[in-house]
Structures are given as structure tokens and as C-alpha cells.
Image (tube, rainbow, N blue to C red; front, side, top):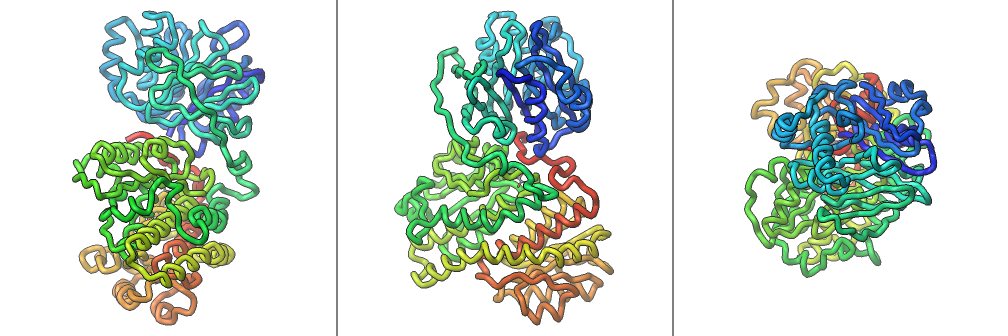
Length: 611
Ligand code: AGP
């Protein structure tokens, strides 16, 4: 997704903008640009296709652009191919209004036609140029930047995080957002704007979270907020608790590797954050025991890995709390005209809290009058702020596009919810509850053990480097972790992969098995071991190479598998937390072997804030 930054203060703006954009590279982009107001009050713009280093070279690290106020952008192409001409910032004809934008203006074609009829010309294929010239149109009409932006808001449909420079208002930035993320930072005599906290955390941990259609006026060390009637809005400053170091690699080669190694601590922090006097507590999430007891069904809406965590939540909650759990892809739920039920808890799982489909699913559930719980990692994100209740995972900033630690913390939240529901519904004994809580607390150490044995996974990855297709199979929770392992492999190694419920292979997919096909069986469920083993044998007899992820000393698995990847023994319901670790490492090492951009895989973005 695109990233925007802005700065006004005492420093030269350009280097600050380039530094901020470098912290947003993980969002995925294909071109970049910055605009800075110079001391003669001209707005100078430099844009480039490709990586940020090209823009930095063009501007000599920003030295070529003098001035203390500016905006910047990394573009993930939606309208118009990646090119310098389509790169932001975009501008009006006399460069007196310059803007950067993250999001999609859905009615841009209609607006472009209107502006052409008003005599406007266009140099690019982007919706952002249309947005910029629409602001220009209203500014010429009202001669007031706030009113110009308010009229823009009333006229456009879609999503936007928009930051605008007006030549008539030197050393000031005007901004507005709807559905696309935006955070404003303030420190001493400086003010910052960005799509995400890592871009400004080096300078300040004091931020404002901007609400939908709130207009911000940034000056040196001062921010004023207005509603669409140009009435001032009072907003509280929030304090970011994690430090800039957390958003750095700390000596690891990639953010993804660093974040994998943070998983023991993240799991421990998430478990401890949910335990009060040894008992699971959801009061802090805004859900009382009485409310939880009254839910007789759950619907989960999520995307990607968050959806996969929802599948684990389904198996674990149905097993422990004996209530039906439905897991939906947010992009489907939002358009499926779902059936409302006041006794249904709708859970939206999202690391970023900004995924457009999941935000829309949340709004659909609320419109239907259903109680909503967000399981989110990013403090103050849109989904977190709009849900009725919020359970924050304690993963800290996750920079790599491929999620690992946030997924692991989502699993803990899932287990905790299942245990809480089972307790209030009295569907498990106190003894079973205590045993499961004890096992939950043992997971961080077991994850550590797996990570310490990474060399065996690295060796396994080197042997699989030329595979064209990889299959993951499992039953129950093992299937749920197989779909996550398959996604990890696809998104960072670019190797095609499928995950199937093991019993499903014989209904068609087994026709794909041929000599040397790699089949990875997840075998963590004692009760289902024999069944999955027989499915693995079916593929082996057709030439497959079998790898088994299973607990130590599983002799039956060792008889069938060509290679066994051992993980410590754990409760079958919590198996995903352990079995996923070697699958993450497998995908990581294959991506490195193939020379891919591990942290910023092609075509992907960390937070999909467009449909
Ligand atoms: C996971 O590795 C991917 N980056 C992607 O599937 C991601 O899980 C999905 O886009 C959902 O993102 P969210 O958790 O921020 O909503």
C-alpha cells in the first residue's frame, strides 16, 4: 500500500521525509516522490520510479531541496502503471497546490470529467491528480484551504489519507483521511504526518489518531483539527509505548527473521496480558463474563493469516466451549448479506487494524446490530477504534509483510477466548482449565527450542529449493496450521503451494501428485495421527517426497516420512503455535535462497487498505 509522510519544523524537511519513507518501504511500493516549500515559497517536487534510493540519489539525500516544510509518498500503483509521471506528489497547473494520497477515489472518473468541463487538463492516469485538482477547484471557489478540503470530502467517494501543501500557506500542511491510515506526530516545535507510526517514531512518540473526515492543519509544533463545518475539534494526544528500536532490525538480516525470533516473548507477553491472578480476563477487552456467557455462536471475519488464525479459533473454541464458530473471509462476509443474530459475537482479526475488507466486515456486522470484538495489533487503528470491544495482541510493530509474531499472538488470543468461553459456559472441568493454562504458559519456551534448531529447517529448505509445487496436509488444527504454512511459502518464496484437509486429497487433488512432489504432513493430533499417515502413504505410493512436522519420537511418522521435523510435545489444541514455527522458517530460508525480497515480497503490501 502507499505511504505518506509530512514534516514542518526547524529541520530541513527533505531528509526527514526520505527517512520517514524508508520506514514505510515495508508497505510495498513501485515509485516515490517528495515536495518541499523553499524559502522563496516555491514548492519544489522530485519524483522517481523504482526504489527510494533512486529518489534519494536524485535529491542528494534531500540536500537539493531546501525548506522546512514538505510532504512525501511511496506509491503502490492502483490507477496507472508505475512511472515517474504517475508518482506522487501531484499538483495543480501552477504548482500552488501539491498533494500526496493513499487510498482510492472511487468516483475519480466522474470527477475528472467534471473538472475537464471546467477547463482542467491532466498529465497522469491517477485518481490522486484528480483529487489534487478537485481541491484546487474548491480552493479557487472559497479561497480557504479548510473549506476546500471539506468540499473535497463531501464530493468524493472512496478512501483517502490526503496531505496538501498550499503555496498561499507556507510552512503549513493540511490533511484529511477516510478509511486509509494516518497518524500525526508532535514534538517541541515540529509536526509530522505519516501513514504509520514507524515513519515518525524516531522523532516523537506523541501522536494524534485522526478520525474519518477530520481535517488537520499542521504548523510548526502545532496541530489544529476541524470538522467539515470548520468547527475546531479537541483531540487527545496518545503516547506510543514501543520505541523506534523495535521498528529496526537489531542486527538480524531481515525483519521477518527478527520477528520470528521475537515470538517467544510476544507469546509470553500476550499470555500474561490476558491472565489476571491466573485466570483469563476479558474485562480489559470490554467483555464481561455475563456477556460472554450469552453468546451462542461466533462469526470470525478476517483475511490472509488472520483468517488462518480464525480457523484455529474455530477448532479450539468448538472443542472447548461447544458453541458453533463460523470463519469467513472478510471480502466475502461484507457482501454476503449475512444473517444477523444478537446472540452472535462477530470477531474481526487483523494485525494492522486497517485492512479495508475487514474494516468493511466490521461495519457490516455493526450495521446488523451484532456485538463486535476486534483482535488487533496496532494501537488506535481503525478496526480497533470502531469495534465495540478490542483485544490488543502484544506483538509490537510488525514490519515484514509476511506476518509471523502477530499471527502467533492471534493464536494466543484465540486460545484465551476459547478457555474463557468454556469457563463461563462450564463446558470444561477446573482441572482441565488449569492444565491448559499451564500448557499455554509453556509455549514460549517450546517455541524457543524450535527456533534454536533452525539449521535443520535451513537444510531442508535447501533441498526443496527447486520444487515447483508443495502440498501441506493435516486434519483439524493441523489443517489450520497447514494453510498458514502454505501462504507463508507462497507469499515470500513465490513457490506454488496448496494446503488441503488430509482427507480431501482423494477427492481430486491427489491427481496432482507425481514423482518428487513435496508433501508436508502436519502430524500433531494424536487422535488423528493414523488417518493423516495413511493419507501421506497414499501420496508416497504415487512418488511424493514426504516431510512430517510432528512431536519428537513419533516413530510411526518416522516410518512413513522421508524427513521428520520435530517439535516439542504440546496439547493438540495449541499445536499450531509450535507447528507453524518450522513452516515459517522453511518459507523464510527458501525465500532467502531464491534471492527474494523477504521483507517486501513482490506485489504485496503489509496492510491492504484498498479493496
Ligand atoms: C500474511 O503474511 C499476509 N501479509 C496477509 O495475508 C495478511 O495476513 C492479510 O493481509 C491480513 O492483514 P491484517 O491482519 O493486517 O488484516
